[in-house]
Amino acid sequence: MKRLSLVVEIQFINRNCFLEFLHSMNKLNHLSVLLVSFFTKGHRRSINAKKNIIAMFAVKSISIAVNLLLVPLTIDYVNPTRYGIWLTLSSIVAWFSFFDIGFSFSLRNRFAESKATNNFHLSRTYVSTTYASLSIIFFLVWIIFFSLNQFTNWDSVLNAPIEMRDELSKLALIIVSFFCLQIVLKTMNTVLMADQKPAKSALIDMAGQVLSLLIVYILTKVSSHSLLYLGAAIGFAPIFVISTSSIWFYKNDYKEYIPSLKFVDFNLTKDIFSLGFKFFVIQIAAVVIYQTGNVIIAQVCGPQDVTVYNIAFKYFSVLIMAFSMIVTPFWSAYTEAQAVNDYKWMNNILRKLRIIWMILILADFIFLLLSSIVYHLWIGNKVSVPLEVSIVISIYVLIFTWCAIYSQILAGLGKIKLMLISATIACLVNIPLSIYLGKKWGIVGVVSSSIILSVISGIWSPIQVNLLLKEKATGIWNE
Image 1 (cartoon, helix red, strand yellow):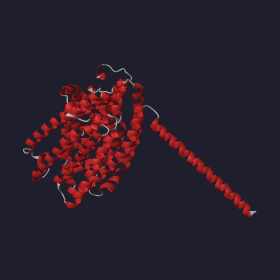
Image 2 (image 1 turned 120 degrees about the horizontal axis):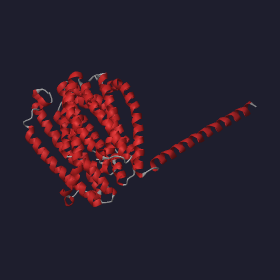
Image 3 (image 1 turned 135 degrees about the vertical axis):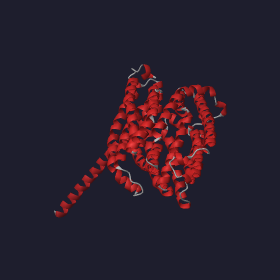
Image 4 (image 1 turned 90 degrees about the horizontal axis):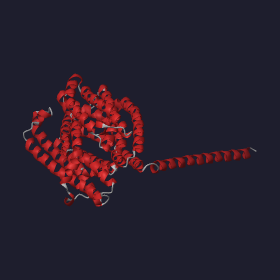
């Protein structure tokens, strides 16, 4: 009887295990069906956006890891003060991006519009003309900078030791040279973004970052404290990757859009410039608002505080990057949707983006709670980041991402006149306000200036987007 009872018990257990196994397999099957449905059901634009968002999360996760690894590696290579000088000079050079006069942003809209109407000849003409125009513009920018660089005392501009003057002059020329070339070549990235393939554009950027990390790591083994080597390494890597990627794409997926002198039509520059000029002014304002922080902190607080600010900002910018992965695919998608008057789809996407932003609030709070632990694990005792700096940057992240929802939509719709006015006012106010608050509160004051100006944008932009998507916008709200 005992043996029979044991056999029955074993059979019962085996039966339960088998049923649990079948139940688990059923759950997995149901999950796989939901997963397949998520990527195959819905509007074509939504499906494409979902695939790009998932791909961008994979690519950007690697980019984030690379950027985080690059910080301590670079600090060890050149020391915290020289790293702050490097960051400040790089920020100044980034200001030169506005010399594209909005061509890249305008190309993104014009390419998407012409491709949506299957006018491939016009698309190729836009691409070729943009390459030619940017090449001319940035060659002239390089010539002017080369002429003025020898008369610029970079040690005074960067609040650096006077004995670094010659080194900084050479470094500035290296950074600007690579930067001008990169702006022209990144037209390939703009084409990918316009074609609603931002994940591929992100992949190009990520590959450049990985190559930069590899080269800097090699530098730590063969040399030390050379800002010139650092500038050459970080400048060369993205150029190499973008060049090889462009050749591959134009020989394969984008044969019909390959740039050619035969397709350059400078008569189109007026059409590109009409929209591009607005983007150009907005771009200048964005550079002034978001890129002057390093310079102001260097002047008001010192280069060492630039390092403190950038460590905190890089940590919290993970959230900005994550949110950007979600909203970025919708710029060109909104351009296409507007061309076919699909307002139902646009309103549905806006509602979902707002829900995602609410989830970001919780993520931002968790990031703040963990900040001191992460800084210690990441940087060790090399640099100390005050809690108040982390708090103010966490607030800035929430406001910036809120504004990003609406700026992407307005840019895609081409309704940017209010954005232009708001950006111009913010541009004029930002520097004096940052200096004033920076002298009172240091890094916290400089970031607070950006917060105040971003809040203003965060108020009017939702109003305009809601009016546009309800087809009730009139006057300046519809421009």
